[in-house]
Amino acid sequence: MKVYDRLLVCLALVFALTTVLISTSNQGLDVYFSVYLFECLALTLLFSHLNPSARAGLNRVSYVLAIGLLCLVALRVTEVVTGVEII
Image 1 (tube, rainbow, N blue to C red):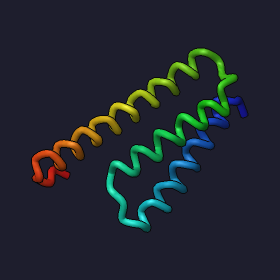
Image 2 (tube, rainbow, N blue to C red):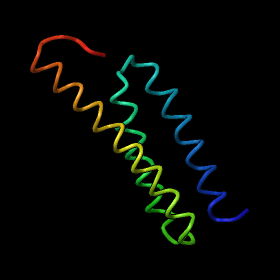
Image 3 (cartoon, one colour):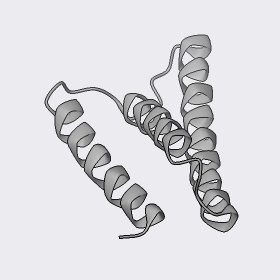
């Protein structure tokens, strides 16, 4: 098994376990995104010795998760400012 295959298996297992654990506590979508982002970044750092193309792909995934988290934060700020529940 190659290193990046091992990373993908680790990401899939960690994301699945996190999804099960968070779903038992009735948390919002912003909690999922933030935990997924931190897990993705941590595992990418652990497997940072990957070849450059695999690392670039993982960085893109991290960017997408970060943008999603920023959108959710912006929606929460809008909810606080306007007082109207959006999500």
